[in-house]
Length: 254
Image (cartoon, rainbow, N blue to C red; front, side, top):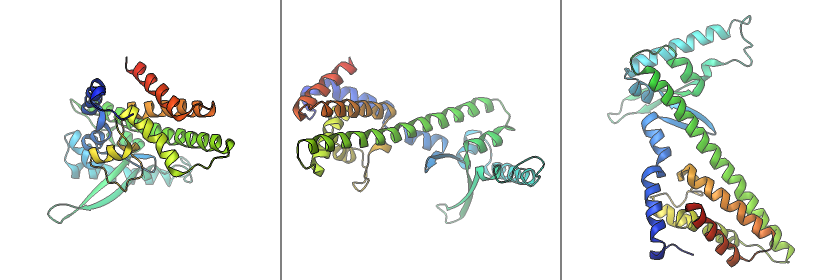
């Protein structure tokens, strides 16, 4: 059931959510320079310098002094097992070309590297900024884990559908899966994944919209997928499941 004018109250709700949360992850990246690479989280040294009110070249100097100190410690076998303790790997050097064509140097810093780097930062707001970064690292990791979990629940839903249809001697085609996802996305997001991409300017070649959803949306979609899978296993028809999930969603919002 697509959301139209008769779902106006929910349209307003989604607009409100969108203003508060839709670009939550992008804001973390923009304000704090935190991003992930294959599940590991980094802060950009340029953003760290800006946030703490420091010159970037001074932060680079601090990082490189820290790397040297860590490598010296790691080379002392009496203190560290060098096969395990590689503290300097918490800092990954990168080079990018700026608008004027010059090559800028910066570092991608892990959570542990960040803790080591800012340990010596002082000043009126230093503690506040340290806590902000720690909170943002936690927030980012929570969003990432939610997306990973959503992917796992998605597999559970597709497996349930396939097994049920096979038990009835029916073949499961692509559109059977897409119908299930469209139904859930329409309930929680108010639109299909395709419509969501169009609305938010997401490249149509992007296979999943998960990275563009808020934690609230991810958790609700995950909940719907589990409930839908359970009803599939109980033999409920598509229309019955659709009606039940819509009622459950209305109850969730009230």
